[in-house]
Image 1 (cartoon, rainbow, N blue to C red):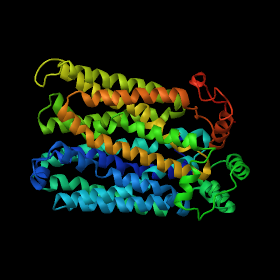
Image 2 (image 1 turned 90 degrees about the horizontal axis):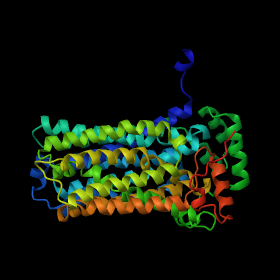
Image 3 (image 1 turned 60 degrees about the vertical axis):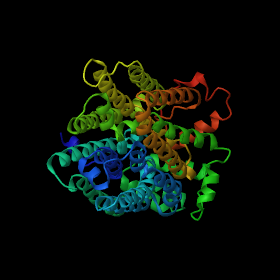
Image 4 (image 1 turned 45 degrees about the vertical axis):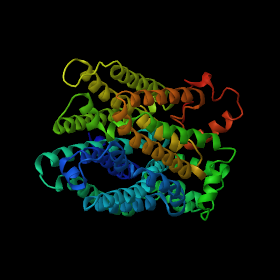
Length: 486
């Protein structure tokens, strides 16, 4: 019994604290859709918002996030992962505070723009930090931590809005969620700066090998593992100048030896959004209303339940991330996501969904939940891990944050066009997202390597070997399993 009560290693605690920052992104995702549908919000900023304005309000966070994400890798490489995470959370908190105090629509959107700048700085570096401090054996489950916390944040956001809309009859019905969000951001900014140990791989990259060794020991990672990392890093990479600029970073991640991996990581992160997931999360109240749940309370509650379902199913996805693997998860997940979207689209196209009678509307509601479940158990986890671990140490942060930038841009497109498509056609958005998921599954089948169970240095060696093999990234390796690591 005593062994079960032992204090976890420091690397686990560090990964938990790092993952906790994900609640900010999740909570904002859960808040913004319900808030823009609240009566008090519409009364404050005009109740005649058309679908284009609605999409712009929701998506205004995303382009700034994409832009700041381009510089997040350089910031993290120069000043450290923990510092960049802390700065990003602080800026995010300032933006949320402006939203909470907004007296005009322009001020509210300005808050979302500032919030986006902070979000782009911290979110991409969460997975990078966890990849770099985790032992190989536990990297998969630990790296999924931010996604699990993001889903808890979505739940918190939805149910906060549900409670505030029911019990507060004033502008504080929509201000309260943002006040809570700003407070959490400031707390996490300070905690990340003060409590997160530096990444030992980042220290080694800057030639601070004695500090790196001491940090590995503090984290509780075995001597054999961190010694192996130090030797392989010295042999393969030789460090990166600490004064390397953003442009040099961008050129480096498209150098001949890594550009195919960079392109794949960037594509996969964009495709993750083109599945339509944030169209579902941002506009869940709208989707449920379209399917027949007419009252705001009912659609808010249904949205909250969907977030709760996502959180629950993300738990096994976290625990079994390394058992399921990255490649098969993306292929099978893509097929499942596409099938669900095509079914919903076909029901609407065939006029089988009536808002007041018939089974069609209930099939749509159930399939929206099913879509969220399949996504949370596959792409939500596997794509982000793959994008973070696929490139070598010298450009890992820059690649991961560029991939997140592509994710933000695709997210912007989805957030902007979803309400417009829904207003023009009941089925067009579903067929579009289903087609994107189909294409992504096919590309993953042809070009992806399986990376589960391998150290970051072994992944690098795998891709170097693969670049010299005709069939290394072809269909014959779809289910190729990695050799066991000792």
